[in-house]
Every structure is written in C-alpha cells, then in structure tokens.
Image 1 (cartoon, one colour):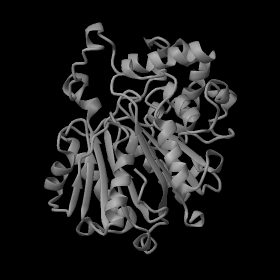
Image 2 (cartoon, one colour; image 1 turned 180 degrees about the vertical axis):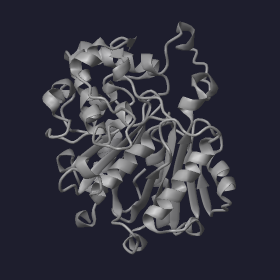
Image 3 (cartoon, rainbow, N blue to C red; image 1 turned 60 degrees about the horizontal axis):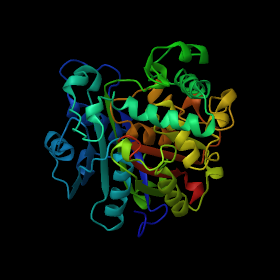
Length: 385
C-alpha cells in the first residue's frame, strides 16, 4: 500500500468528534458525520467549499460517502466508501494521500458516524451468515476475541489479571479526558469480578457501546503549514489482512498488524522505540495486548507481563490509548477514526492533563472485523521531517 507514497507529503490538519455517548433523539448516522465535519473544518480554518475529496465508512450506511456528499451538498472530485470495519479510516488516510500526491484532490474529508447505542443491537446492520461458525451460535464478536485470548493464555501463560491491567490503565486515562463516557475509577479486582461475557472476557474486558462519530481533514504538507494549527504529518502507513472468519485465522495469537506495522515503520524510517504515543484499537483487552506485541513494543508472548504494574497507564513506561480507548472513552461500532483523532491531538500537544510530554511521534492502529484487516498510520510533528 505504501509503494509510491512519500513520507511527510500529506498531513492531518483538522480533527473533531461529533456528539458522543447517547445522542439527541432524531440524529442519524449522517447527521453525526456532518457534525464532525463542521467541527473539524473549524479546527483547521478551512471551509466546506475547500473539500474536494470525501472518504467515509459506516456499518449503518451502505454508501457512506455518497450519503454524506448528498447531505453536505458536495460534488467532490473523488469519493471513497472503502469499508473494512474499524481499520477503514487508516486506509482512507492512505487513499487520501495517494489522491493528494497524484494531484487529483487538494483537501480530503474522512468521516464516520454511528447510532449503535440508540439503535440497539437488533437495529444495526445484521451479521452475515457464516457457514463455519453461525451454526454454533457464537456471541459475535466477543466469542471470537475470547478464542484469541484463550489461545494466548494457553501458549504463553497470560492471565485474566494481566488483561484486567489493560482495562484499568484505559480507565485511568479516561478519567483525564472530559469527553470520556466512563467516569468512575476501576480496579483489577473489579474487572475480575464483573459479569462474564465470553470466557475469559468479562464485561470490563469489552468495549463500550456508544453513539458517536467524527471527522478529520487532510491536505498536502505545503498547504498544511499555513493553516490554523500545527499539522500532524503522515510519516508512514501500512495495511494487511489475514482472514475474515476467526475460525480461518492461521494463528490466533498473531495478527496482520505485524505486516501493517512493518510497512508503516519502513516508510517512516522509524521503529517501535521511536514512538512516543501509542493509540491502538481496543475493542477488547486482548486486542491491546496483541497489537503491542505485533507492532513491536514487546516480544510475542510477553504482552501480559509487559502491561503489568501500570506500565501503560499514566506515569507508566509507555503511554497507550491516552484518551481512554474504546474500553472507557467511546466505542460507537467502529473505533478507528477516534484512534487517529487522539494521535493528532497528542502530536499537537493539546491533550491537557493526559498530554504525553514531548510527543513528536504517534502510532494509530486500526482493526477491522475479528482481527481480520489491520491498518497502521504513523504521525509526526514538523521536527520529524
């Protein structure tokens, strides 16, 4: 995916969430995309008339970019509804940069919206029939991630207590984020005692179910330097997939993040040791652990021990999911866009109490399906160019 793309040639210049949590009655998926769009444009000082590329995905809108263009009255030169679950938005960043570098567009809008909480599980897009799994009536997607967690436990001696440390770390970060859904402190004991959803995952090992959306604005590096806020330059990106059904995953302990991360590091000319802030898709506690391993922050099998004793919480050795993540901040169906938003804010130094000191680089990693489609973006300040 990175072939032909240039390090630092494009930048994210505007980011914003829509309303989050439980949205006002009557607001739909595209309303939330539009809210995020207006706020992201205001964030960077551009106007809707500047947008000539539109990228969008949503589990509740089959033709998301077309729907958003109709709503906003746009007729862009390029639009894209690439849909691969929660990693769609990192892939949109790559597609947008390709279009910008080719001179096809100048300003890209990437947007998402979901009313998953308000609509309820039965009214969101139904799951496809899977002949390998559906007859066994799994609790999808929790059972798929529980399978991966169980295998990691078996292979490497990982424990429920270690996964609970990930949930507790996310909550500590969320308590510093005014927009986070969860506002109560959380302990390892409380995670372990909470309701079991699909063994070994309790309800506190699982992401939130919220409404919400957002948007980001991208443009060329040259144009980015003259806008309202410091740009977050795209240093590297990568993409890989491994399966669709969890029953067809070759190794339940190894994700395609290994490949997508390697591509992103190669393009950026960086390694895991050079990353200041780590923002990864945490639909479940096990995903944080797997991505820390597969993106090179610790060896395979060492993730459980790596996260112990507050290592990824505020004050720990590696800042991970500094907004509180999908576990405690928000998770409206597909979380990938919010990973990018937080990475940009850390690069800009505007996260207040939860700001990572001296943050020059951030990794934003998206996960689609059930550990199926992985996409990685590395962002940096102007000092990293």
